[in-house]
Length: 66
Image (cartoon, rainbow, N blue to C red):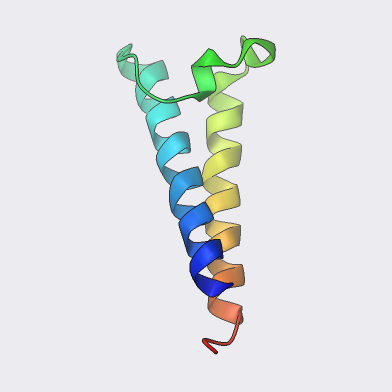
């Protein structure tokens, strides 16, 4: 379970980071800008993904390794 939380946290962190990278550099990377209902809210969604990633990392650390 701990490894799953860490994997999901890593994926959320990467998608949030690439979403911010897309917004500030116009590189076409990440999935956040491809979701239609997020038009105009990509930066907020990317920041929310980064916050979610840190919450998942914290939850993974609180789990026992066994």
